[in-house]
Amino acid sequence: MPALDIVLVPALSDNYVYLLHDAASGATAVVDPGEAAPVEAALAERGWTLTHILNTHHHADHIDGNEALKTKYGAILVGPKAETARIPDMDVTLSEGDTYDFAGHAAQVFETPGHTTGHISIYFADSDALFPGDTLFSLGCGRMFEGTPAQFWDSLSKLRGLPDSTRIYCGHEYTASNAKFALSIDGDNGALQARAAEIETLRAAGKPTIPSLLGQEKAINPFLRADDPAIAAAVGKSGADPVEVFAAVRKGKDTF
Image (cartoon, rainbow, N blue to C red; front, side, top):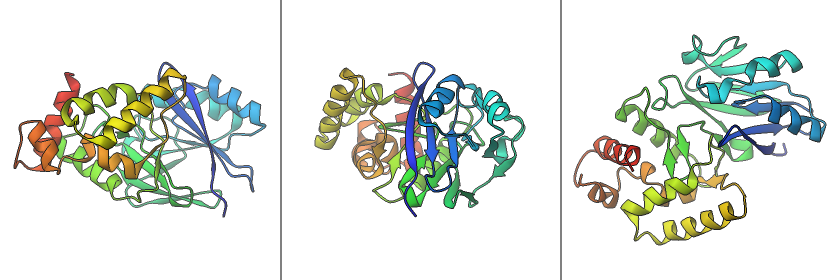
């Protein structure tokens, strides 16, 4: 089966919403619509009709377009079972290990608490595409609003286990600021230096830095490397448990 067509749709100030289109059936999903208008415009431009809405977590900048899009298109709303009380009117709820069939494409579900307690990430193996919401960013991860360091590190470890060829379609354009922080603790990393230069060029041209490649992120994203002695040493936690190292890295970014 051909891979999904994936279209990045900028929304709000720095959010990314994604359209997923199956050419054979015409089915089209939107991931985390923080607002409806840009989604409607992107659909109209392509002559697509929305059939599904996929939510990763309950934050308003990821779900505020749900109601308008559901009403206009009659789309099926799919989201995390653990956030049922916080995302209204879901038609299908998903938990760890579930697989959801979207037009013949298998969406594998990972529960990835940390940013929120009920967060999920959605992975389409046939399209090499991961939608981690605000769990994982290029060179970063989401703020730990609700979860614990142990939960968040476990969540990132799950995602790190996916194939290197996986493209990461995350929820925000935070890559430039994430790169500055990453360089502050891992400045001798040549691969990171090269990626930071690429990011600067892309942003100067007004282009997105997303998707990023998981294989590259494993080498340069400090939040995926809490078990790397170099990162532990950089945050003054040599020999510490990766959870403790992750907590220190997250705290460092919070105050950077």
